[in-house]
Length: 340
Image (cartoon, rainbow, N blue to C red; front, side, top):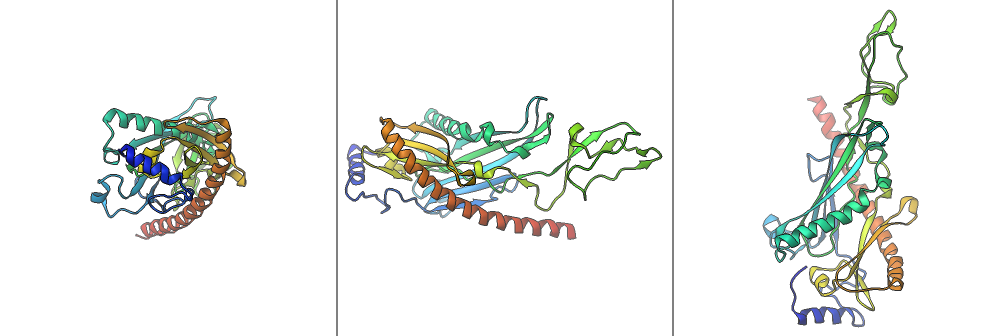
């Protein structure tokens, strides 16, 4: 948000309430600014994306000037091996949001900390829910699993934060490892048939102390080397998108600029997902000064579902293009490295 005088606030509110509603950039109340999504922006991360809303920026020097050009958010995923208990399924998602002071020059340090805490709570309350935890984060059932850490940084804010679904996140391919005594009969092959370890054969059958089969009794794992650097996260269609509706007594509007957020602070954050094409409400949160009643919120939820579906469709199409581009690039890089 930015600092506005009472006259400026009154002008913005009266313009939005006029017939037809007027906005400074010429958009209608339900129009979004251009959204640009780019994946693979952090080479050392397991998955990453940059989301830019509004006018693109000319460079880092221009970005540091604050909210003049648009919103820019960068998110990255890092996978770490985590121990789990015998009665736990394993795998977890941990979210963190950081805000650059240059994006909020008008906020004091304590206010910036509060904003980061609110955004972390909003993101983590949904994405960290066990129902959305990808099943393929489990490495060795009851023993080891991947902990997915999602770090999001807001570099510039001109209203309406967004975080991309990191579809280019890859869970490293692993093979289960079992340590067993010599003379034990070989167990059946689990998943990988071409890349299992060679096993020495003795007079009584396999005599190796290390076995990469039978994951039910596995105690450890090893990484497999594949060109695609692992598998995509499962149940990606269950991840929600967040739509923010700024509210006036007789109108609501989408994708508020920083000036509009200051003039109309009351807003409703709604998170919808569409697994199998069916809408699923994952959460909602009212923020800002003001009041609303259940009748208005019920109407807004119906509108939010429609807006979220449109955003979901466009985002899925864009991310599918990015995934295809990244897959071709990764394949070429892998085979080029092997030829050398």
